[in-house]
Image (cartoon, rainbow, N blue to C red):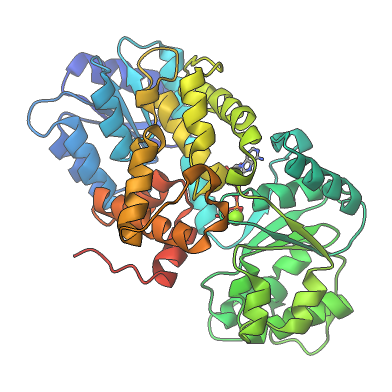
Amino acid sequence: MAKKGSILVCDDEEIMRDVIGTLLSGAGYRVELARTGEQALEKYSESAFDLVLMDVSMPGMGGLTALEELMKIDAEAVVLMITAFATFDTAISAWEKGAHGVIRKPFKNEQIVSMVARGIKKRRKEEERQTLRQVMSRSVKRDAIVGRSQKMEDVFRMVERVAPARSTVLVTGESGTGKELLAKAIHEASPRTDNPFVVVNCTNFPSDLLESELFGHTKGAFTGAVAAKKGLFQVADTGTIFLDEIGDLRPEMQVKLLRVIQEREFTPVGETEPSSVDVRIIAATNVDLKEAVRSGAFREDLYYRLSVVPIELPSLRERPEDVLPLAQHFIRKYNEENAREISENLSPEVLSLLENYYYPGNVRELENIIERAVVIAASDEITVDCLRPEVRDPEIARATLQKAEGASGDFDIARGINFYDEVKRFEIDLIRRALDQTGGHQSRAARLLGLNATTLNSKIKSYNIPART
Ligand SMILES: Nc1ncnc2c1ncn2[C@@H]1O[C@H](COP(=O)(O)OP(=O)(O)OP(=O)(O)O)[C@@H](O)[C@H]1O
Ligand SMILES: [Mg+2]
């Protein structure tokens, strides 16, 4: 029988290694044991594991240092720290060094098994995300989108109206506002719901590669095309294709996409005859496409074709009334993931800090803030000190911003919506600090900021933030 995944258990105490090792092999995992942090690192560099369980206090290199070193070897490593002294500081530093979770001793067997299962699931998802092709099978119900503000109500109404048709939808909004989630919701609410939903990220793919991914190719169409391959448009036939980061589409591909939209047909690479498909297109972008049209980077005709139905997702700071229901939604999610029982009732103090924070990374950032708070909370309640410094103390955010602005800032965090430039500067500063904190590690920094790694990378490029040396 194929094993469910590989796990490295690192603990200096033999009895702990035995207990956990036996438990997890019994649950169907391939388990290896390490006695020290050094040994764990050695084993991990020989072959990566799907998940690592690491004791915090060990003689020699402690668990936290080992964790730090491990993240350098594999930034996507999934590590669960085990500790008898679940102090606040330990939990915070484990979290900030990139641990996926903290398990407190004494633990229940079921707790380890369920956290491991979730950790492995996350690892698999990450692996899937790394590949260009991603056929979504996970179903998203309309109630997966949380929001009760008028602005989100308007969005929901739009979804209901456009879902039944085949019209192309353009979803815009800042990073982390839920564009992908919305695209899935439209698909789910449409008659195509039982057919494929295919996600394509248009960023950073050389045009020729993207072309054959989207449209397929014949055998021998180019060097390396040893067999014919279906394109994603064919995979998505009768379903929906989600073209993410459409603003990054190169000009050659823009022409080809325009043709698909107009004629509902395309020609696979190496083929002479066009194929036709029945696909609904949903595109998304966080760049200002109108501006891209003005500057000549994006074709105007394509822009009009795509934006038949435009839906703009409001930033989180424009809808503070959604902060509470979202926070509660994420507390439930991360309680389950971390086998914790943190209360969904937020103290007025915590709620007010959350509602007044600025959220450059929008809902994704709030999700990250809550995840962190759920993991590090010392009791069953989220307290102010579980929040990140810039959330906890508006002065920190304000000071950062004013420093960036030169002495003249009278920026109001709560009403900052209109100050696009300030937002940028604020963001640059946050990114710099996150990079500093993570030793220049982009995917770690992205996680701290609540951005996805691709988004962070494109921000770093567009803001010209120098790499750390
Ligand atoms: N209204 C919402 N209710 C529940 N979860 C949400 C909501 N909006 C966003 N999320 C969650 O926030 C995270 C970011 O959402 P998503 O990936 O859809 O954002 P995005 O706009 O595509 O971001 P980016 O531009 O960075 O790709 C996801 O984990 C998503 O599930
Ligand atoms: Mg997205």
